[in-house]
Amino acid sequence: MSTVDPIVKLTDVTFGYPSIGLTAPVLEDVSLEVVPDDFLGIVGPNGGGKTTLLKIILGLLVPQRGTVKVFGTSACRVCSRIGYVPQHAEIDSSVPANVLDVVLMGRLGRSLWGPRYGRKHVEVAMEALERTGTQDLARRPIGTLSGGQRQRVLIARALAGDAGLLLLDEPTSGVDAHMEHGLIDLLRELNASLPIVMISHDISFVSSCLKRVACLNRTLTIHAADEVSDATVAEMYHGHVRAVQHDDSCAHSGADRPKGGKGSA
Image 1 (spheres, rainbow, N blue to C red):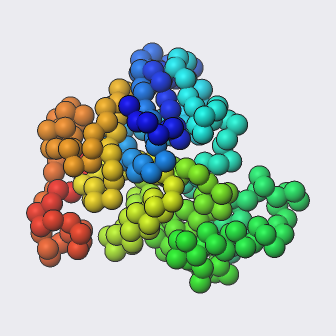
Image 2: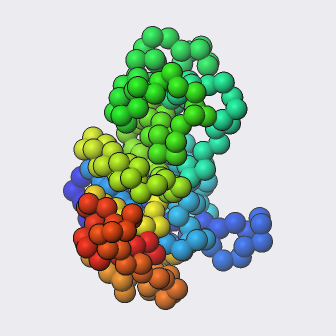
């Protein structure tokens, strides 16, 4: 057990969706601690409870059993301190909003004038854009961005709320290989100042920056990132896993991937 006070502490959490006819719990007796310098990856099959776990940390869902503490209190009390980047962020590209407008949405709960923002809020939003390397895009229409640029802007929006914890659901999904490497480098830099929890299906691709891996398929086990083996992943996916070999000529190999490294599960 860590001697550092955890940012997130889940104890024996069980959650299900009986209202939609699911009799078995999605999460069962899940216990998890996230410490201040953590970079935790969550992997597991579809339906294994990954997004549900993030929503419980966010306070959007309340477990049937167990306790959840974030920053030492209930999650719903500190939701403004949690930056969240969902897998499918709904931003209508036809809306005449620029990048700065989108990032300022992260300040909405902190503005005394609702959607109107003073100089301080703009400065904080610009700082978030600078942290994500997108300050030059501030006046660009949001609908003109590439997938990688859009993800960086969404991360900036999450940071603009003075986040002390960053949660990401498949942040590299739909992003090309070059942009994917850049996003991983960005997350590594951000982890120097705040804990990060991210869902990913391509755990081998980001293992160079992850510190721990949570294998989740209703129940949860934690491993150091360098302890996750093919056998660990195969057991979690009940054997239905395909390892993809990449060589140096493959667009997905990347400079940081060891030659012949495994692809996504």
